[in-house]
Length: 131
Image (cartoon, rainbow, N blue to C red; front, side, top):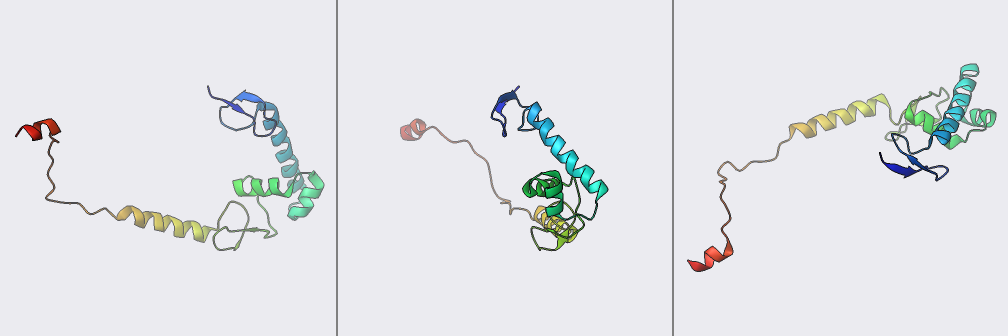
């Protein structure tokens, strides 16, 4: 089991998945739950309103949005590629489709092959000098 320093409190702990120790992970989950609960009661709140009401930083709330754990209706979150308003994640559906198409096309391209290539073994330099 790999040991690591907690990203938040710097305590050494056995890292399984997250770079946070159990106590910091529980604290982070409490923050997320407060944001989620607030949004369930006030679904049309802005980022600033959610941050002020929950005492959770806007940066952390944006992280929840990028992870897809929550959605925002107000249009404050933008696609990282084209800038269109999105509700969660990093990019809009159109950019995801375009990226997938580009990846598919890259996979279809093959490297040129040399049809007349042959294989051989390398001779030892000492054997070459004796001839």
